[in-house]
Amino acid sequence: DQQVKQNSPSLSVQEGRISILNCDYTNSMFDYFLWYKKYPAEGPTFLISISSIKDKNEDGRFTVFLNKSAKHLSLHIVPSQPGDSAVYFCAASRKGNNNDMRFGAGTRLTVKP
Amino acid sequence: GAGVSQSPSNKVTEKGKDVELRCDPISGHTALYWYRQSLGQGLEFLIYFQGNSAPDKSGLPSDRFSAERTGGSVSTLTIQRTQQEDSAVYLCASSLGLAGAGTQYFGPGTRLLVL
Image 1: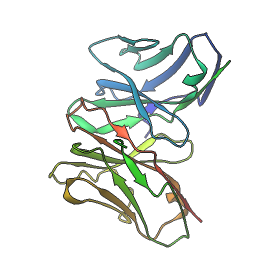
Image 2: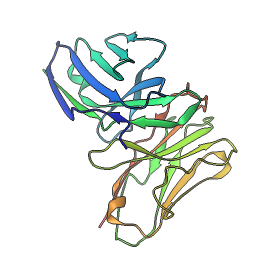
Image 3: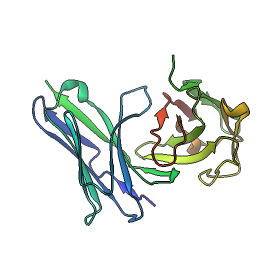
């Protein structure tokens, strides 16, 4: 049962443009959402998170948007840089239940110079 | 280094053999997690250790899988009588254990191939 879905396995954008990575979830009990970034041969690293009480969280070039009614979140990277090329995982959990985090299958982002 | 380390980085084994995967969490992190990622899939939760509490084993796919965490630090994931469908990247993560607020720090993973 895939509770967190990333329907685009890959995305390619030009350097300097905006990258938009999408994620959908099915469990309305999720109230905490995270994005992780993974380079080859390395473990995922935490990028940005958002609580369900917010609809936007910004950190530098990275912004996460949450649409609770649509059970949809997205990660915007602007401007995109070649070093952003990686696999991005969306994750969702319920606060107080850290072992119940569910991850999407990931989206491979390629930023072309 | 100060990050999560895992060994071996790669493991090739024959069907039916047992394998042990090791994880060294970040010092001071009380929570430790094991996940696996099969080809084209997301990270699948396997097991969770928090301090001295009984581990949450709800994600283990079968009784061939087991894990220990000795002394609240190093953890070993054991897969007995490996099957080809066990082939995956096994990831370990640790966190401060603050429920819902503790970011998980991942190791580089062990890539397991069962022939």
